[in-house]
Amino acid sequence: MSTGMDITQIMKHLPHRYPFLLVDRVLELVPNEYILALKNITMNEPQFPGHFPNHPVMPGVLMIEALAQTAGLLAFKSADMPVDEHTVIYFVGIDGARFKRPVVPGDQLRMEARILRVSRGIWKFSAKATVDGQTAVEAELMCTLKQLG
View 1 (spheres, rainbow, N blue to C red):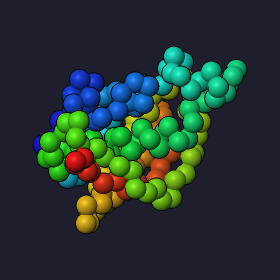
View 2: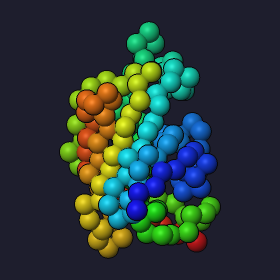
View 3: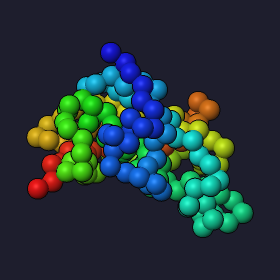
View 4: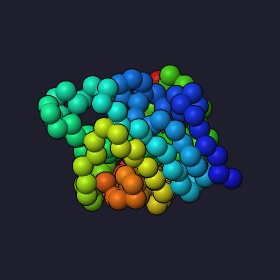
């Protein structure tokens, strides 16, 4: 069954907060399959005064992080793990990251992640973000969910 999530629901499933929460809305989520989410890029974000003055461009590492948070939402919903202050998701790897176009204020990232496999607690995803139908970034991401002591 496909479901969406608003920002309040997202915050119940991700430990990230401003300025590092990089998913604004989930349009579709099918546990154990895929997720489609949005990140609205605005000039008010803290990275733009320095990256770059007079030519703001979203850093590639933040696009990858936004994709990782999207994949993390899919993992939490698929694993049906309790989400609380004792649960975290760790990034454990990135393969084949490719940046295809700059992302600037006013753009909307449409982020999609699909589960490729889950093995020994490591989740592997195929992830891609587009702007206006053009690929901005794509990569394979790995993460793990952990309960803290």
